[in-house]
Length: 274
Image 1 (tube, rainbow, N blue to C red):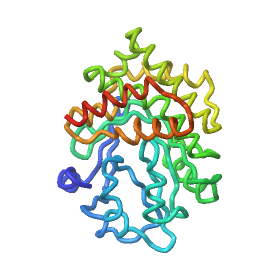
Image 2: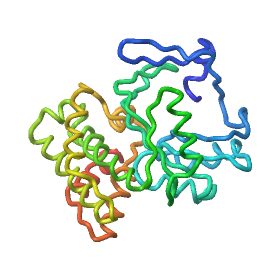
Image 3: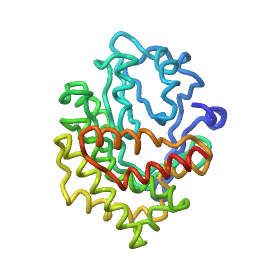
């Protein structure tokens, strides 16, 4: 832990708030640096992709001969970056479909429990992928194993590209306002359809029903602030390249035009440089 380390050690717990219920995770094994921990079986990377330059120094003290690395980072490119640093054989990828916000020192609020999706880099799931999924399930976290990790990443972009992007570009608004505004909802849908077409350019089929489903699961989150908006408001780096830039570049390289994404990427790049 970083900024919350002192508070968590003093209290001795991490707090999770969900549906009006408080769960205290105690005792909390909290450390100030990876070197205090040493080699482990599994490293879970939950840093933003804007912190990629820190990964080597953070992960190396945790590695043993058979340590696996699971990245829960968003967008495209995180899996390949870790493979370049530590070898593709170590890397698994995961996607988190949850609405969670840090609301205090060592405290998170969960607005939507969702699930975790797991896959292997560049191949089908292995025994370790399924074993890890079983660990998540045993911890009361819904886990799904997918045959193709890259396809799953494109599917997640269907939500992330419009809702994270429009929340910032339209002046700092929450997801309920995007869904309730006919023009913004239409823009979000068009962005989703562009992602759908781009994924098809790589041989991945995203059904129309999946697109429509996003407008069913999002309104119940009420005034939810996507994590990119939270980072933007706090003056932290926003994952502009991983979520908007890299998908756009890959699509255009495959001959798929994404004019609405190109426009949104340009707006976000300018806003976040400020």
